[in-house]
Image (cartoon, rainbow, N blue to C red; front, top):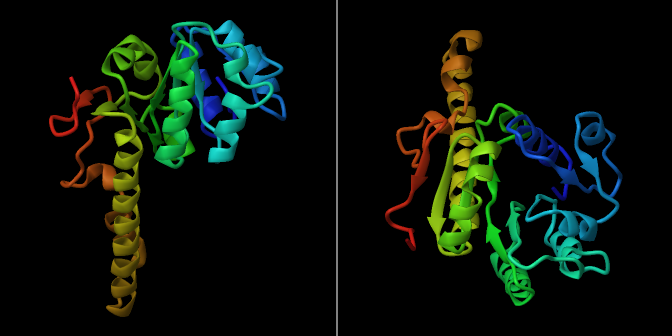
Length: 226
């Protein structure tokens, strides 16, 4: 596991709780992972040397490029057949270029952003949008199951990121709509304590929501490459 911040650490915990051993790397270190039974690596390369499946979730495209193709990146120690589950939300073209490099080194890289707040990750209420080679996704399905209760196979590489863009747009629309509703309630003289629970932006309950409920795995008939 590369990236052990607000999203990565609860992902690592979910994996360990479900029986997976986690070797993790964070530039600033992670005593939390060590205390909970994981192994702390000194570099992304060390993670690659230990793992058959790599997961990463870091803030920027530059960070993703550094952990993969940097001087201590995963490509320097990648084992043939390794699958890299890349969960950062970054430019699809830049991630696709990295996928090509991983493939040239004998592995595969999947685009699997996770949609949800840090508080949703630990109880497995966040949704992972998995995209890339179907056979590779099948191979890591038990890991995706452990990361988040619901996950969706969206099809060709990059559709996972694009599905998250849609989810983010829905969240923004719901948030703005809820704010406008609260403003109207205030102007109408309503009790805001009564109104607020009914106006909270909760797109996961929207009738327009296309992703599955907790514990379900869904394959998009419109996007699938299977």
